[in-house]
View 1 (cartoon, rainbow, N blue to C red):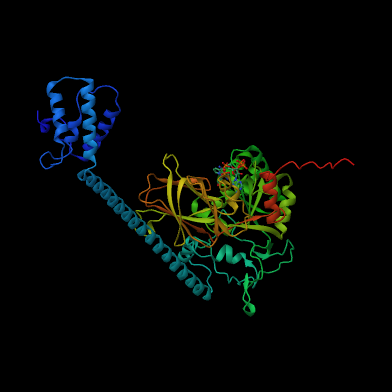
View 2 (tube, rainbow, N blue to C red; view 1 turned 60 degrees about the vertical axis):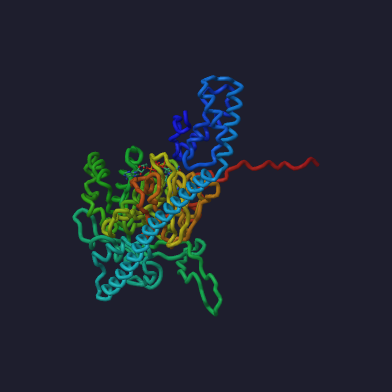
Length: 571
Ligand SMILES: NC(=O)c1ccc[n+]([C@@H]2O[C@H](COP(=O)([O-])OP(=O)(O)OC[C@H]3O[C@@H](n4cnc5c(N)ncnc54)[C@H](O)[C@@H]3O)[C@@H](O)[C@H]2O)c1
Ligand SMILES: Nc1ncnc2c1ncn2[C@@H]1O[C@H](COP(=O)(O)OP(=O)(O)OP(=O)(O)O)[C@@H](O)[C@H]1O
């Protein structure tokens, strides 16, 4: 039998090469005699015609063995050793080495091509997002210009422009808010009406339309003297000094009496329902306040007693959108989830929130429900401290969206937006940019982009720091990152963050907003977040800092430890 007729001779592919080699190693480790010598398979590795370097002696000895058909331990071992030697000699020769080298070169080239393709895809996504942001900036600028023009003609509103202004995220409202109510502080007419989103305020049969005005001023160390805010940085005489801190206590003082209170209550709770009915009655009888409740609560109260005929509610989304133009104060009865729910009803400005605690933790609910009369008295008379809680405005931009019109409505969150892997078993793979700078790639269970108010919620559970709610910042907290060095970050409040699911991500990701409204993010989709110009003003029981510290002590039992005993040495 000639070598070329042997069964393995056609194994000339790279797969064949690997198979033949491992076959040889396996054989050399085997203690038992091998009935059919495998050396011919090595022979088959090279072209029998062109290769001149084959060891013919070795091959001949195998040929004779096969020809005799005898299986002798000695002869097979000897021939095996010889054939193995031949094989190793053979392997050391250049054709195989060069085949290996070519394969390595080829796979490296493929990797380079894949990298280049990915960079192109990323570049395209980044350019799209950047173009999108510039367009927004341009439109915001135009909107402000138009608004200024319109105000000059004595009109306060313009539907389209207001809608635009409410959707744009990249800039905070103009700081020169000296207007109808004087030159200092912030006037509610401007915050709550002039820049309101949606259509013009219009009268509604269901809801009262007059709104109380108030003024915000910056207090000093809790001193309620109405001291005004000065420039944060002064350049006098060429020296840079920080003249005033930005996060002074903020006081709210009514300029006319509040008339309308909106109640937002936790559902499915009898104690909340009973308290709500009692508070509504008290406000009506003792304070002559108009009360607005959610449609569900309206039904419940009316079913119970026709006495509650005076309460108002809304019928449709259009009326709901106009709530901020009618409501002076929001009262929430429940836990933190109820405050989040109340905030989510307002896509633009939010009236001050007085949160009564009827939940288990109550980080944002400082008012004790048992003392509601005193608490409401104080708030309705004013002045009272508020915490201005920033919200994040989040836009989902789909890869398939051809232009801005196809992007989805922005979502405002008070706590955080979470991007996680949902039910996917793959690591989330997220590319993160801050303005136009690359931040990092998240590989892990996900990422939390949190406000400072949300710093004590999910972000805290994922290892983020607790931050006072009036610190102007955005928290960037990974969830179970698969990297030892991925520590949480806190970024300044003026940045815009973009989280992109890259095209080469193995799986999809899910975004959820204050723990609700999950949205699927497919490869190529992006989420853009920046601080919204519409914060949630929450009334403080004492002041912002005292309330925050009380919450971390009483709610989270922060750093609670038994004190060490000190009984002193014996005299
Ligand atoms: N592992 C976690 O800690 C985890 C997981 C998912 C969601 N959450 C949080 O739950 C929030 C939704 O709240 P919910 O009441 O609708 O859901 P829920 O009923 O599941 O309550 C979540 C818990 O988080 C607390 N909480 C909410 N906001 C807080 C805040 N700003 N500071 C401190 N604690 C806060 C609530 O008091 C409640 O005890 C999400 O925004 C998210 O922050 C936390
Ligand atoms: N007015 C509302 N309508 C619909 N859902 C609401 C409303 N208020 C609260 N919720 C939801 O009810 C759930 C529970 O509310 P909340 O967190 O206030 O109560 P809790 O769980 O008793 O308080 P805590 O979280 O402090 O224990 C939350 O998921 C919240 O989103």
